[in-house]
Amino acid sequence: MGEAILFTLFSVSAVVFSLGMVFRRNAVHCALHLVGVLLSLSGMFVLLHAQFIAAIQILVYAGAIMVLFLFVVMLLNVRGETPLLTPGAAKGFGFLFAFIVFVELLWVVVSQGGSEAEPAPVRVLPPGFGSPAEIGRILYTTWLFPFEVTSILLMIAVVGAVVLAKRKFA
Amino acid sequence: MIESAVKVLIVLGFVLIAVPFIVWMERKVIGHMQDRIGPQRVGPFGLLQTIADGIKLFFKEDLIPSQADRVVFFLAPALSVITAFVALSVVPFGDKVTVFGREVPLHVADVNVAILWVLGTTSMGVYGIVLGGWASNSKYPLLGGLRSSAQMISYELAQGISLVSVILMTGTLSLAGIVRQQEHLWFIVPQFFAFVIFLLCGIAETNRAPFDLPEAETELVAGFHTEFSSMKFALYFLAEYANMMVVSAVAISVFFGGWRGPFLPPVAWFLIKLSLFLFFFVWLRATFPRLRYDQLMAFGWKVLLPASLLNLAVTAVVVALSG
Image 1 (cartoon, chains in turn green, yellow):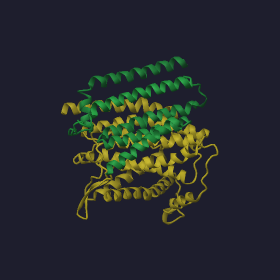
Image 2 (tube, each protein chain N blue to C red):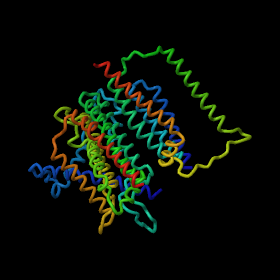
Image 3 (cartoon, chains in turn red, yellow):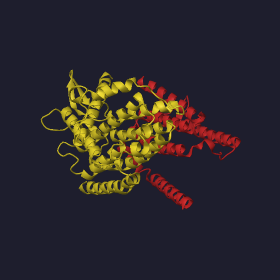
Image 4 (cartoon, rainbow over the protein chains, first blue to last red):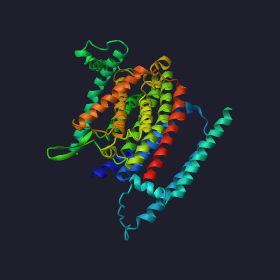
């Protein structure tokens, strides 16, 4: 019962904040709504017994990355920027990506969810599911390669940003 | 359920009652350190001075700048306070006690990722200051807000890494678990450098002197809270002191054995250690001049961060060898 109430609370707030993020005109307000979405998702992760992911969600995304976003938005004052795409093209790309994500989600639901005649088997969580120790273990065994590739990718991005910034202001 | 609600009320009430006395202590101590006598008119030893100040703030006119972003202007001080209080919810302030035949652990919530929780909420605390500076729509608050976000993001890194070396030793992220492991030896002994780094970062995170650049009055009027008056200003004030308690409480739990101590009951030991830490904060403010902004950033990135990484590496090697 409590879980259902919390789930409703978090999902409604996630949807409301997402809508706010898309429809607000002020870029700072948009960023704040995105923070709201991230916090709601973090609540969802707690409901899924993934406390570590929930804490990381707050610490990394809401606490660090979005602060930087906000920082940049505040400094640039984007109100007078000319947009990169024409409104029509932006809309077209928007619908295209929304459609791709929809198909992806549909595929996951259909392939994992089973049908009415043959419902998906209920899986029991392995012991230690969502604990920092368990996540650390699979991150450094099963998923070691993607994990390291991601870190190299981030490193390249950082070095690239520094190089570009230097060239511009030298 | 009721048990948690009672504990929440106790922690909230304690902070709300303690803050006026910490402010009084700060004014009195700094007064004597500067050869003044500090507040003395209201109540015995001026004890009621800060209460009188609080009442005054309650009844002051609440000014909002005409060009301010009203919603965010309301939200920002509240965010500051909420994040500080939420962080305190995972701090263990005593051993298990038996109340009406029930074993009650003395912390609001034993989250198994408590340290991440504290770091996460304190990093959310940046929003209160940045948004306060932005929403005022005024020059000095914006500059103060930007300074403080840069400062807090920079010092968070070293702070987090200094805690990681303790986590490596204990193998747990739970504050209660870390306190439980300090039965024989406080972690200040093996992790002295981590403690120094943590404390320096903690002072920077709470924007206390000598790292109080976001509100450097000689350059920025009053920094991010220049435009805030009445209870909104009081909320920022409250948040600063609550954050000092958070940093002290985490330092106590991680490095100073938490509520452990001989003879006296655990809660008493926790309060004694907390008071000493808060006194230390005040002492620093009376002792050191403010850093320059470039010195602050250079110190954070070029000294504290490499030092914390080195400490982490050494700890990792020692832990791996002693296996």
